[in-house]
Amino acid sequence: MIQKKKSQSHDPYAPVAKNPLLATRLPAWRSKFIVLLVFGAFAALAGRALWVQVVNRDFYIDQGQKRYQRTIELDATRGRIVDRNGSMLAVSLATYEIWATPRQVDETAAVPLAKLLDLPLAELRRRLNGDKSFVLLKRQVDADTAAQLSRMGLAGITQIADSKRFYPEGESAAHVVGFTDIEDNGQEGVELAANEHLLGVPGQREVIRDRLGRVVSETRPLVPARNGETIHLTIDRRIQQLAYGQLKEAIAKHHAEAGSVVVLDARNGEILALANYPSFDPNDRARLTGRQLRNRAVVDTFEPGSTIKPLVVALSIDEGKVRPQSMIDTAPGWYKIGPAVIHDTSNHGVMTVSEAVQKSSNIALAKLALNLPAETIWTKYQQYGLGLRPELTFPGVASGKVRPYKRWRPIEQATMAYGYGLSASLLQMAQIYTAYAGDGTMQRVSLLRNGAHAAAPSVDAELAVTKPATARAIRTMLEMATGEGGTGRAAAVAGYRIGGKTGTARKQVGATYAKNRYRALFVGMAPMSDPRLIVAVMIDDPAGKAFYGGTVAGPVFSEVTGGALQLLGVPPDAPGV
Image (cartoon, rainbow, N blue to C red; front, side, top):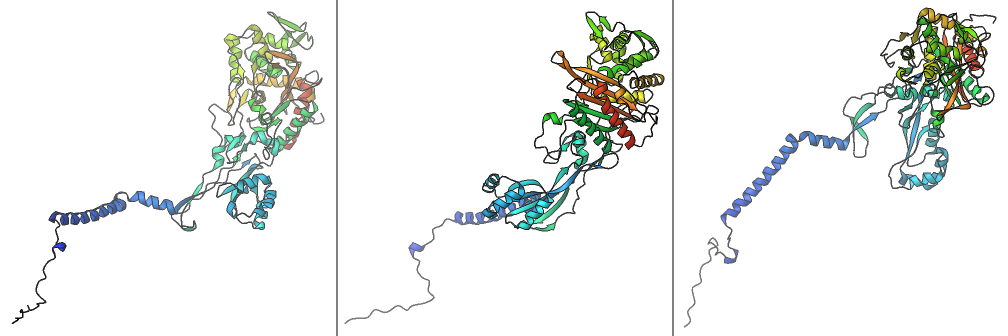
């Protein structure tokens, strides 16, 4: 008999027996570690947030601003340079920079673009085929060309506003005004001397740009640019043109190497004209040479020859050694000092001190110099500024040279009285003669008119270098030198009394003086009744038979002085002459 097993009743709520394979065997410390790790991560995030938002907040703000905030510099316009009457000598004109995005420029645009911009086609293609994403094609393109380019509607071409310096007077005032480089910084002349005043101060505009580079807002009020100052020169444009034109003609006529003219206002030392030849056009300097660039009137020094003679004559009179009518024996036309011999152009015999200046006697001046202590002469030359740099706000101004008196030999003391053995610039010689036009007071030369840019002199604007009576006596002698029997007759000016001194100095080549190479000089003043102008002329190395200061430089003085007096409205003091 088979018995059935009793089936067990199934309780759905009875606990399920655990599968030993699924049993948890993790140690208690591991769960604690995981909890700590999670809390540590949150702490690190909180610390980082604290570092970014509190501790190093300014740094991250700055980094963010750099990505979207930009400071746009607003260019200042370079200041103008004008003459004493306000006529323009230098001004900045609006121009454009032409840039290209090469990948956007069509190949067919290269030919018309090169033609319009006056660029070699090969050079233009080289730039467009380079690896740069944005390339400069040309700077300082004028407004008309830029307008033509805009009308062409070429893809990938961008114009950026720029400026270019323009010099209306061209080569006539080039050495005075100077020029700037491509970055608009002064390189020569007043452009360099007054560069700080001319530059101005750029403005600023701070903006926020979006990711496409578009300006969406401004973060600060705009700071406008402060344009450069206007520089007022003492130069008179009309007299400058006159001086340059006459100088250029004289150099061509005498086949000379170079030359300079300086015109000063005798009353205050203001430079009315400062001309040099050869010159250059500051608007087109592609073929500029160093020879053209030299501002010879202020940077070149030379032996001044007989134009220095009035200094020793004035000193001798001031020291009581002679009077204008004192007699000096110059016979027989030569004078021996040790082994050296001094010559005059002819035997003048016995002559007065005044006649010695009139006829330019080397022997008479040598005797006057040897009758004075060397130290006295040297000290007086220093007072006149010889060997010292003129206090002029201008680059490259030369000082000249005078050797220490203790090293003078008798022959050197003698020759320095008629312009050999020392050197000076033409500007210095013109300045010296202001003493004789102004009753013994020498004027400080200036190129900038009174104002914020004019440098304050470290010495008095006037310096007494000789007695008033002596200066008047020298004026009389200078007038004699341009009259009958004088060496400067060719310097005469119709309608005006003039006075001046000629100079003919041999050029030194190496260690010796060349036999047939000279500098022709003339320094004078007018009108003699009340001197208004000092005009100094130097013609370097005239070729041919005419080489004397009176015949070569004298006529230039005549034309420049006569024209300048008329331009200034100075009435004649010798009508009918």
